Amino acid sequence: MRYSWKWSAVLTDPYFDWIISGLELTLLLSLISWAIALVLGCLIGIARTAETKWIRSLAAAYVECFRNVPLLVIFFLWYFVAPEILPRNAGLWVKRDLPFPEFWTSVVALSTYTAAMVAEQVRAGIEAIPRGQANAALASGLTRWQVYRYILLPVGLRIAVPALGNEFINIFKNSSLALSIGLLELTSRTRQISEYTYQPLEMFITASAVYFVIAMLTTAIMMAIERRSRLPGMITRATR
Amino acid sequence: MIAIEHVSKWFGEFQVLKDCSTSVAKGEVVVVCGPSGSGKSTLIKCVNGLERIDRGEITVDGVSVASPKTSLPKLRARIGMVFQNFELYPHMTAAENIMLAPLKVLRRSKETARTRALELLERVGLSDFADRYPANLSGGQQQRVAIARALAMDPIAMLFDEPTSALDPEMINEVLDVMTSLAQDGMTMMVVTHEMGFASKVAHRVVFMDQGAIQEDSPRDVFFDRPTSDRAQLFLSKILRH
Image 1: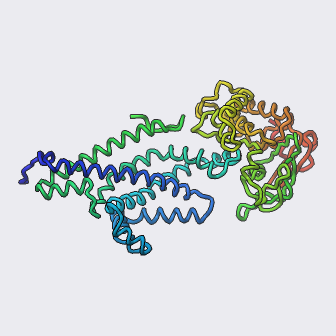
Image 2: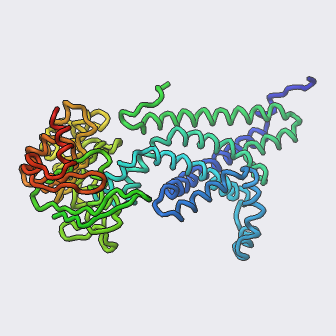
Image 3: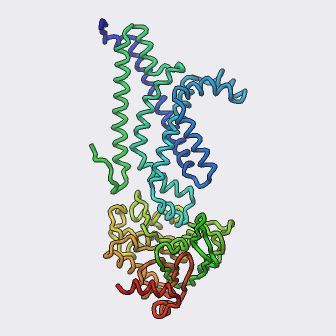
């Protein structure tokens, strides 16, 4: 291979600042989307275990729609299609007045997609709880909503923590697809720099390394949460 | 206190309860027994609306359980229930398990609820275990916490659904002792159990069920000395031999 490596390009002005600003957008996009996905996913996950059939079906339809369409296509749907099929005024607002549209559209795409994944983990967590638990709580006079609030969600989420950790790592990696609608996040920035410097290998290796470090940090955080949230007496994998 | 009148229930095609009628008066202890699958657990779950009935009527303290106008949470808050598998909340300590419903349903203050929880734990002989999690308690201890949890709501009646069936033999008595003392204090109790020793000592009446129907509903002494139905005689001859 005839390629002249030039790692110093990574640290050259203004490229280093570009990488940092890309990293900032990646983190911001991922964290905001994660917060939304967690709330939305919990609600949909609860709805998937509801008594009422139409609520269950509606939640299941949501999950299937977002799980069975490639994330890249979901980005395009929200960016190109949604403004056209929204009511006229809302569509115009999105096209003309929405500030920083590629960022907020990415937030919507990532969080609606990840919410479907979170919902499945929350549903699985709730369904892993023996039915008698809900019966005991209902029998003591709690309302169905209180049973979710104080028993099913706290226990179900604890069961779901390891799986949710995976989704949390995925959201950082998936955020790179935002480059497809023009957001200058980390992947997009490194590609841009490689076009300026003709040093693509260094740039993409740098991007990979940064994602890797983020994922490792996330894993460490999730393992700490796992340790703290573990149900007393429940057998889980040994602490590494 | 509890009136069960002509109650029938189906699971799909299968009829689990066939025209069941019985009652539990205030201060009375009624034991419901019978072979597995006879519908006794389903019947007791109908009393606080955990299972829906298809026909007939159940009233508790004059309130119809199946009526759409009845607020089930309000009714259930007045009836204590103890389950076969204890069903303590695994993420809460013994005291927290007992305090949850008083805090959230009766809106008692934290101090009041905690004081009452500790009193009840003392009553079931577990004063030192208030801050233990269920996983660190034995089965018998868990069930006694579950009884304390039900009592914390100051119930007008207590339902027991096979409270000792999931216990090791040496832990059964510690739970039965608590139940006996409750009965002696005049608590209204409906108890689904196979513990005939408990029935013969504590029950005022025994209801015997088989294949979804109440075969016999007699005062305790009549049931044990001269049961009228053939099925009850057979049942008694099999279990009393041991």
